[in-house]
Amino acid sequence: AQSVTQPDIHITVSEGASLELRCNYSYGATPYLFWYVQSPGQGLQLLLKYFSGDTLVQGIKGFEAEFKRSQSSFNLRKPSVHWSDAAEYFCAVGGSGGYQKVTFGIGTKLQVIP
Amino acid sequence: DTEVTQTPKHLVMGMTNKKSLKCEQHMGHRAMYWYKQKAKKPPELMFVYSYEKLSINESVPSRFSPECPNSSLLNLHLHALQPEDSALYLCASSQEAGGSPLHFGNGTRLTVT
Image 1 (spheres, each protein chain N blue to C red):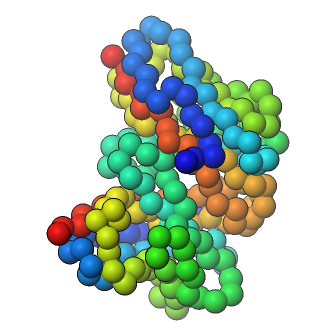
Image 2 (cartoon, chains in turn blue, cyan; image 1 turned 120 degrees about the vertical axis):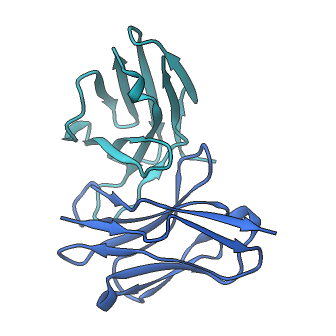
């Protein structure tokens, strides 16, 4: 069975500081990995995804993530956080089937302080 | 702007009411999904339609009845709900290909009184 662990429920960073959100996954084969962001009262928006190729993937809004197979990790990073990045971040794992039975992590709430 | 449109944005209904949630996408996606999200929790999959056929029902109570009238529309019919069904209901769509990301609507905030 596939699963995702986001060990940090809540993270607070200062505006302009760097950010790393952790994600560990469990999947029997090569997984599709995703990061989504959700602002309050909104749906989820895809930040980036990984399946194969370069293990460092670039996404929207200046985010990037690095896939490390040996650590079963897919951590999300941003060099300089903006106040508008405050939101809930979900890591997710999916398979290669036609439609996506995606498993989401519990989410990490990011608070940005001035 | 989201490419998946959900209506209404907010809905308050009594336990004896019948109501419907609607979702529409025009991206040509052939997979459509209903998720339920409680506060401070991740989305939970309820139903998946693939090519307008119900492919996954995650043991959802029968008071929730999905319908996919065509490839662009997805409905969720609600009847005799309980207060614990109050949540954000999210619709999503994706291409029918491995690894295709989900495109979410902004959801319907449902309150059952």
